[in-house]
Image 1 (cartoon, rainbow over the protein chains, first blue to last red):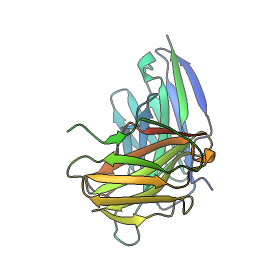
Image 2: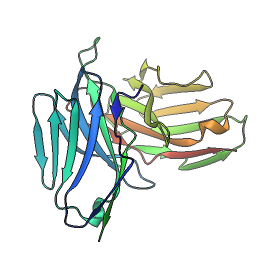
Image 3: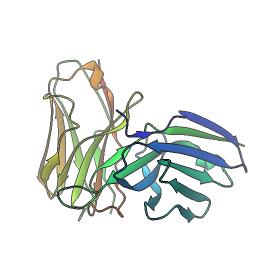
Image 4: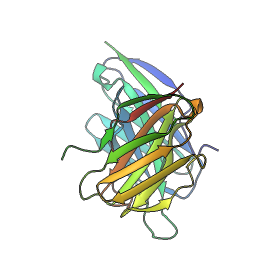
Length: 117
Length: 115
């Protein structure tokens, strides 16, 4: 059973417009959420994160929103650029029962974003 | 630091052969993770180590898969015997700690094709 779901396999937007990538999770123990970006033939790279004590985190053109009651988060990219074309993975982690540390990241399947010039 | 280094980048092997994937984590990182990426399942965590000790291998699909970390700078993921359904991209990642405010750094991956 997928604990982190990205229901849109792909998204296409025009350069300069907003890109919104969505992610849902089912495990209420998740308390830290991350977005990774992946270009072809490369490993995923960290993009932005948010703790469950916040509902918004912004870094330049990238903003992540968290709605805990809905178990939903989203990544907004404004304005979108052709270089943003990549696969975006949503990931979540929960406090480990044994050590108290968050050690496991659970990933969604990814959403392929295409930004058209 | 050169980042997480994986080898080989590509591996093509015949069904039934043994395959060994290698990873060198970032120096000083305490945690090492092995992930597998497929179209159907996305990025799956196979196993992770803390200070060279395997902590959770619940993601390892079968006994054909094994992983070791003999020292802080080297880990292997072995598949014996390999099967076509093992074809995927395998990623290694490391973090300086397991705590929630730390993101994982990924290697470039090994694309495995079993024919």
